Amino acid sequence: MQHRLQQVKRLFIRMTLREKLLSLLFILVMLSIWTSSLLKRSSDWNSNRKQAQSDLNIQQHWLDRSDQFAAGLKRALERVDPEKTYAFTQLSGRIDTILRQVSLSQSPTLTLFGLAKAKYLTIIMFVFGSVGYRLHN
Image (cartoon, rainbow, N blue to C red; front, side, top):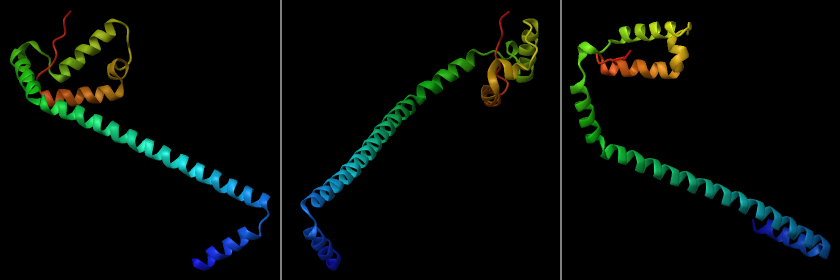
């Protein structure tokens, strides 16, 4: 390493003033590019850190309120009368009937909700079991 440094020093001393200035300018440009890249990466890292902190705060807020949500769900389920609600297959048939009445002939799952929401509704119906939704005429 010492030998290489001496070679670079000798080479620099032998250069003309113009070559020295251009070499230094090149080194300064490379350092500014490197510094700019470093600052951008650190800025991105800090932005990601702040976003993660914000997400954690929001999640903690939801977790802190989980008892309220559980109590609200319990109250809502107490008001549900299973005799007045539809099972999943009954609800699906009722939606299909309504869609056919308004001249929507395609699959209600794909036209009304989209595939992703249909999966979501299936999960909801699975979780709540016999608790369906009452449709008003």
